[in-house]
Image (cartoon, rainbow, N blue to C red; front, side):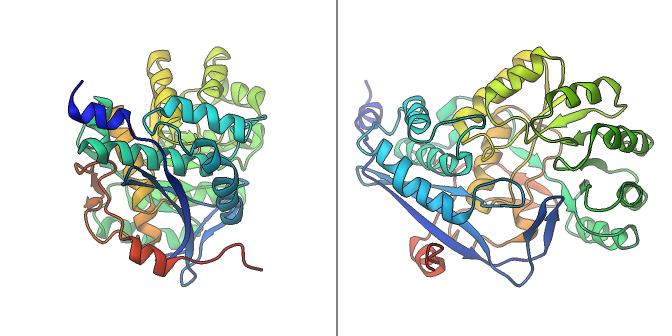
Length: 388
């Protein structure tokens, strides 16, 4: 065994610490469930620091109650009171064992069980392991198929009359692909917004995301409106647990149906594959509880012949880097929704960070996630979300 391998095998988790940080918000952002970010109001992200024998790794959770049930308060208490005690003293390399320990601490139930909180710790462990060996995650996994990932510019909340300015802003920033949030207006207005984006960006990749906003009948009507607009995917049009409805929609929709919120755990994807109810699987690190389960989900999609797309949760740079490593590992070469830079600033990343130029992100090559966290800045940004 090499010296590096020996050192890695001996690493045990010493501490797990949470910081809820207030990051500057650049633009407002909403989904069908409500507001995600408000310009001028700080965006709260929960950063998790894991240490093992003097080494440190960082992860991130993005509380968005408009999207799922975890809040900043619940993430902090879940990590501090349940997940951290479950892994203290465990080998830092035993990611499979950590996943099992998490499921014992906070059971999956019908969902995955606090995936955002679990993700932050899982990603921090990956970062720590990469740093321990001095290699980026792709080298740690032995899997990186591309060095860059194209990003999509998000259009959300605008009326059809306002869309041209939003698209022009994206193009001015070098973006060549656009994702439109629908379900925020009446059906006709949703369709008009998508049409306005297509007219403003006639040659761009374009896909839409309803975030569970429609019924089956409404989604079918919308899909028939979208097919002539060269929309590449209709993301999560129905409620996550409407398996029968999604199967019916997939059979009739002229636009490929992509699943996001429906795919918390790899076993969810297995169910949809068995029922022939999925065209496209969305890989999303936080939704699936971290990189360990996300890699299993991506591998299953590949083996089942299901197309993969990528998405995020308006992550700051830690979450952004984790997603880039995952998408590069599985060769996701279509534009992805990693929109954090569009809506907030990662003030804590004062050293190496993610390079984005003309709407294309370069997969970090530094050790671990490849993002350097300035803990003094983290402490300055920290807020007590549990204070009355």
